Each structure stands twice: as structure tokens, then as C-alpha cells.
Image: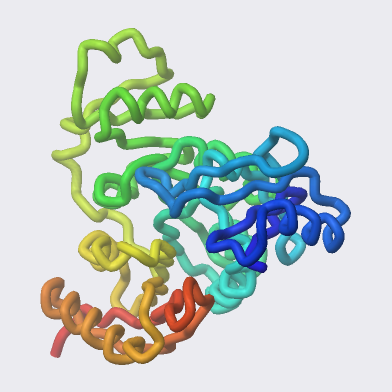
Length: 315
């Protein structure tokens, strides 16, 4: 049986080996505390990597609190991507972070990686970037729940946020996606200190924020003005396409943790091909520190973490 337990919610994954009623029966027999059972009906969908669900049992609720390694994560699974399967991997990464490191977590979701790093290392500061305003809302709440004070959470697309990250403060946003995205921000109830808008529209004039800035105010500033000792990129299907934004942000000899999907027999070859391609395009050398399978997504297909050092000073 393939299912995840997130707090008091069980999520059944397809394909199903039994009928839905049998799944419900077996889950309830094994996990007495479950209040809601959901069936995941689709793969994760853009733009926020959220699947569609059907309620099979229990309360009509999708918000819960999950506990990992003594940490508490509040999440609405209907609005935010969250996987409980990577708890050991998150702990592994956190324990590698050295004292006083400055760390960036791209695609940070509800701030799970940043909170692990804040709790289980002596990092100086952790920046997190997330596109989903609902995830940012829960991420900020999770910082309060876990009493974290060295994480700066930013709302927006990595390719825009990363360029000016050193000028942004906790809760700041750079918006490119127009009215629908702004509507999601309003619906999330997220309070934003600064809203940077790439595409101006007459209809947003009446939206009230504490401050309203336009990207023209940023474009004259130095780009990639912040550098990090370590960058985590946990978006396996497409994180490699964001290396062009990660490399300018990494310090010389800094470490990147890049997640990818590979078929088992192609892992080593695939990793080398990928790093060779981007090192040539982006003009850096690299040293592979570790290639680790951190979960299977299908028979013979794995989520892989590539730990590699970026060497910018070419000889």
C-alpha cells in the first residue's frame, strides 16, 4: 500500500492495489489517530506543485501539523506541497552545515529545510525563496511555532528574487505573474512588506499595501549582490534549469545540493553529463562530493541528491 501520513491526514497514492474502501479500512486499523483520508487523484500541478485530492473518509479538512525530528510543521496539503518522506534527507543536509554558514534554500515550501538547518546546525542566516503565497504564509508561521529567528522568507520566483536577494527583507516579494498571482497573495492573507511588480496593471491600483515598489527601482542596483556558502535546490524535475541563478549566488568553494530524478542505471552517467553541461555553460569547475539516492518515485526511478562543490576560480 502506497500512502503518506501527514499529521492526522493520510494521503493514498495511485496506482491502487486495492479498492478505496479497503485502503480506508487498513489505514484506520493501523493508524487510530487519522481524522481524514485523501486520495491523490493527479500528479503535482503547476504553478505550485499541488495535486488534486478526493476525500475518502473523515473530516473535510486539509490543514494539519506534522512532526519530524522534534520539529512541528503546519501545512494545508490542499494548498501547499509537502512530503514527509524526506525527513532523513533534510536532517542529513542540516548536519552538514558548518558554523556561521550563510545558506539559501530555493523552492522552500513551508520552510521545512530552513527550519531543519536552523535547529540542527549553527548557520548564521538562512534565506528561503518560495513561489506559492500559501506556502510562504505557513512557512512564516512554522518559524514562529519552532521559535526560529535566523530565517528570511521571500515570496516570488527564484529567477527574479535571486538577482536582488540582498536588498529584500522577511516577507518581501517580487511579482511577475499578474493579477491571478496577486489574487492568490490576497487570498492567502499574507502580509507583505514590499510588493515589487514587474507587469503593472490599472486594476491593481486599489490594492493596499504598506509599500508599493516597481522593479525599475531595483534594476539599477547591483545584481546577485548576496553570496552563500551553501544552496539547497529541492525541485527534482527542473531544479537544474535554475543553476544559472544559483551559480552567481554561491561563494567560491561553496556547496550546492541539487535534486534530480534518474533511472537507476543512468544515475552516474546522468549526473556527470548534467554537471558537465552546466559547468561549461556557466563557466565553473566542480567537485562531486556525494551522489545519494534519497527515495524512489517508481520502480527503478529515484530521487537523487547531488552534493557538489563549485569552484569558480578556474586555473
